[in-house]
Image (cartoon, rainbow, N blue to C red; front, side, top):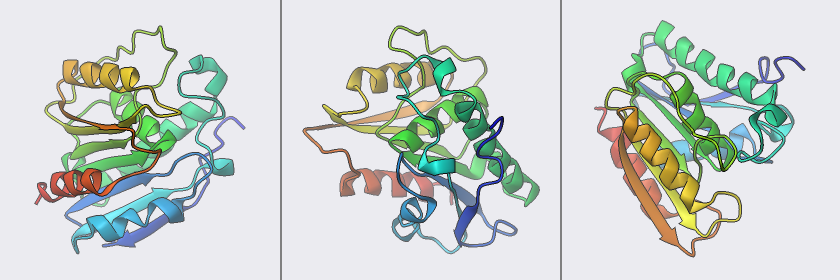
Length: 211
């Protein structure tokens, strides 16, 4: 259990990472699967993009709310972040610059995506967080070290949302901006816990801007 996500499968679509122009790492939500989130590849498809969707152990990246004390979500959270970083490193080895790697997730996967780039700061192609934010208790500082060097970030969520308070989305945006990201916030009043077409359109434009 020290590294529960290490040997889980990765589902791929689109271009092989070797020779691809960019990569989009897709992170599923709690109770979902890599195959489910990989359906976004149809919306974001471009022949030069490699899509990589890792599967979480037991369909969950960590057992408790992202607002729970961080230690309660260990070792799963650290393992999940390491899994994301290993996929990014694989893309770099395949010849895709980190500045052309997009990390995208929904719900628990969006929280993982946001926390992953904050803990491993660099210039990424983009962060796309559909209903998520930085991980930690409500009274935590959310502060991270390092620079995101102009990384574009989309933080989009419904308000109210049953799992992700809008206040945490805003706090996450402020921290990412402090780290040097260029953040776009999208607030959808009364939107259910899902992804809507308007969000997908903005995310698609953000990804295609890498070309």
